[in-house]
Length: 203
Image 1: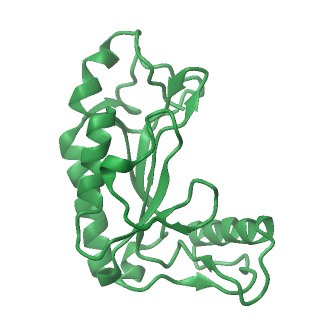
Image 2: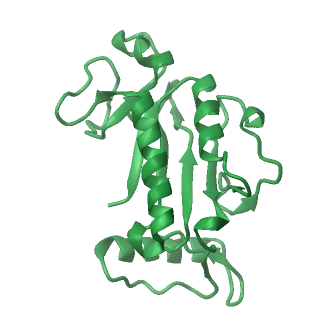
């Protein structure tokens, strides 16, 4: 299962999260909001797009290993169901981008990256932000990478409080698809979620 955490936060708290995730020397950030990997030179958490804009990035620390690339059309196969699914998505992305042999598509199942995605906006509601490690097997990518992922997710969980999961579902956060994801809330929005008058939803 992919390691991830979903959470609601304010714009101020989002900047704090991104400062933490990108604080290491030599860290690289890539914009993936247009479904293509674009290096975000000079990335600064204080300079991210406004709260109503989409934001999706890959974060890479070279100390945890090199980026791995597909240089030909990915084969739909894998040692586990999860890795097979990852290769299926890679094949889809390769075909949609009309790449040719010799061109490159990042292999997110083998590369030591973290992905940060701002919550989706829909019908005036905002879904939870997500931090996830795409690889289907963290240990296979590397022990230092696995430790970085676990530290990062734990840091976010410590700063939030669970406001919805399968054991205690929220009665005040809209959940049109009846999802049972575990979702945290940071302090700036925790009190707001106790009433129905807020912009957040489980999307």
